Image (cartoon, rainbow, N blue to C red; front, side, top):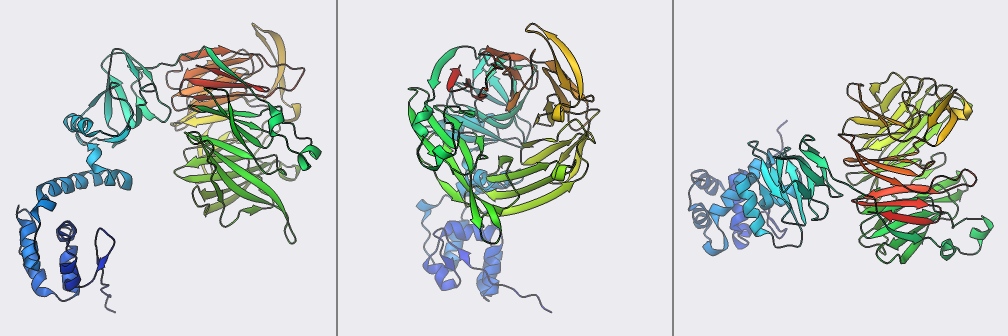
Length: 575
């Protein structure tokens, strides 16, 4: 059977579709016609419509001729306006676009190709074109040329294409944070030792022999008192004995700090300590999930509904809070609506405009079995993209529970009985360890892990001595890490990279922010910031220690060079 030759139209810049030669002449756009000519589509378009004479004339033209636009215009019998189209500039732009297309298919980059630099000379020319308050420049590596960049110009985002190298220029310091300079997908180096202060949204590799992380957070600059009485309301809330006095989580941003209370998100301005507003979530549910992603907070809001057939089901909505516009609160309904009878979301993650939801159910039916449910939802329209359910059997030993972490679009979980780190999407083993671990985070093929905690007071008893006194604690017999320790493992080889005695007491908070690792021992009131590559101690802050006689809300969060510490109903901001 003959293959059908489907006719295609010529699409003009205004969206109009041209299907006949008469329409083309009446709506002639020289740039569009040139584009279709150079990639061969114009000849095909003519041949499909049996304009064989015109097609033959086009094939006889020399595409390298400086007068090509005039020749094509004359061939179609239309006037050519030389002032409206510069063919030499067009061919240069087209040639550059072809080079860029070899290294990326990102439409944002391709549409901004005039802001792509292949050399230091081109970068200097781009600096002269910058007129906006902020601008994104793209650095393309085609010949391994090194780009020299200083912090004299501010409010610039540099995005690398094909992993270019950037040489930082300065007097032993480079203040990217203060100058609002962002580096993404580049490798940083310097001719001399340089103290580098990274901006929040940066994502880069660097030469640690030259680039030193410069972060010195020590001074208490502000204290914010949380007044929970402002968030109370009558009716069912009072019957449920909701306690709004104790905050649970804190999220630090540039100009605001957001606090999670009992089903309430409160937003405070850090300059004035003023309460900007608050958002009350569904009143039937305790397990609202929240994630911070750059300047935004995403709240997975859950409402329990009663269905005549299915019984109690959960209805999910997504609230977005932008720290730059804290009073704007767009809500996205999941579509189709996510109704799960058994799925209670334990973890959410954000990656490339997709929200990942995970439900982890351990000890199913009082066994050592594990069930993981997951789904992916578009952040902006709530459409369901993919869902998955797996069941694992005999995954926990008598001592350790399963621990898990989301990183860069992947869900990792550690199976204690097999001493194996797994990745959910491919259901493959990532690495097999010689012992068990507890809570962990993953960053650039490195696993940062704490000690494993025994279940139900099982395990062996260990004694410890520190400057705070002596004591004993229950530990898993095969734990790779002891109390107060942090282990770093290469997940490709399984080898141990480093082991830190980070705190004298138990580490109960472990977070990673690009190139900064945060550890916290609330039991002794100690927060430490580390360089995630060199493991150099950057900052150490002593706050109020944990009071064992009363339950204490304690959390920490970092944004740039500002650290928020939540203790009970007060937020302490250090810089």
